[in-house]
Image 1 (cartoon, rainbow, N blue to C red):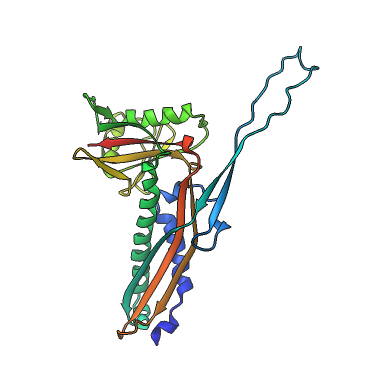
Image 2: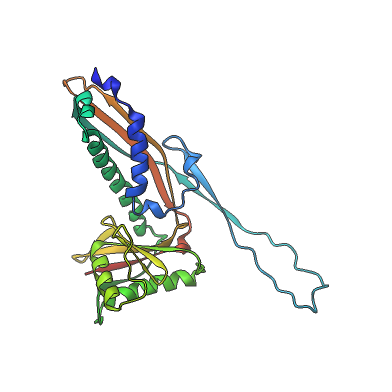
Length: 286
């Protein structure tokens, strides 16, 4: 059977590599715990420690006693790994497909894009999590804003201001992920103001605004209220969401009742907000 010649590790390596490139939301997650789990149902314990109190001494007190040691509160977050996205499709004759230049690469490309969309939609949905602070609901516009409207740059400013109030340092990179409609309005307003940072990056999907990285994705979480659809624009640091993708599996097989080869596989992953103070959202309609 021709599927015996299929080399799944080639696909697994390619899918893992290309997922990194195609996932907009996953790209900006905290991934320190990537190798900690191997199977579905396992969990990662993410330890957290509160900031200690900082005391001051002037020179007249330098020889005196310092404060007693405080008990620094610690906390931990349990992150179960339970998300599985899989594929299973006929490929005809695998040997013939591999012999035709570009066919296998095209199949892998399509598979990777579909998996990346699933992962990104899941991470984007964390904007609906109760831990994600929503700063307001508004209509995003360019130019002067009327009642119930907010200029798109003002929306970005409000999210950055809130993160700064939450003690996110100036040196910490903030990533804002917006939907295409927001991005179009942002780009027009941004260009109209002719700011110093008007150069678009090579990908064509990223701008910098006031030091924040602005990225566009069609997977931004959406909700519907009173007949209106809202996009949940998300601003966060790269420590706000933990993401784990420990397992990618691909295999070829021969369906019992068909004279064709098939390929099936899955990715195991999960994500969780671990620093809610470093993530804010805004509900925007257009």
